[in-house]
Length: 274
Image (cartoon, rainbow, N blue to C red; front, side, top):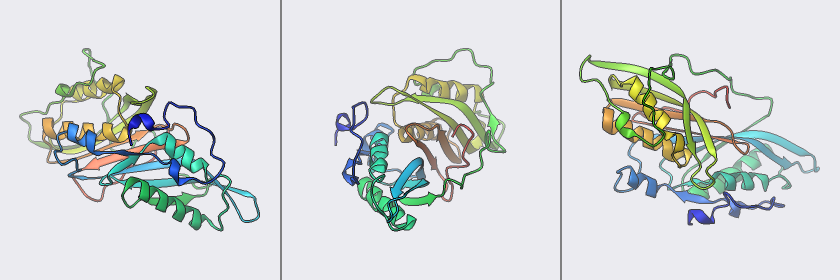
């Protein structure tokens, strides 16, 4: 489907009944080819963790039930799901009757897996269950106060560099200043960026300048994280690398992609802006 056919930026009717056809997949391949992945496939590891905070349905007696969900899309899936279409789809469950929470989770799992072309994992949680909110993960060093004067607001991957001397280091770096814009509506998307690596020491002032340069960049959350990951790999050449972004909520959803050279990673803890 062409992106201009997506529900983003258009007036949409509130769905009156369950409708998985509302889900709008967006192929990952075009962005990955732009990143230099000639076959359009992701070569490393990763997932997209969505937190959906507005989920409701009807019990058999007609009384509503509410929940929130953790939804994990594999980075290897052919498509992402456009976020407004996800919101409309989840709203289409509001007047549907389900016998149990498990039935709801199974329905969402099947619909999202079919739409994105990969095996999606869905966990429904009570609104009394909440992840622990923290300012930023322990052990991460904030780079936002590095002395940078020559900031730019146009995407600048040439800002990245790593030291030629000093040996190999392992660092965990954090910035709360990642901002990009929706490629359809132009609305701002805000995130905390988390970078863990082993390799030659990355210049922190240059890294901060690079993060700020996303300020006017138009792209989806998943594409931004893959851009950061591939830029760091190509320009700093770390031995190992994990890039996470914890985005703030919009439309009852937050999207938290991670990409890594290592298996067994995850999206990290929920942050206070979420």
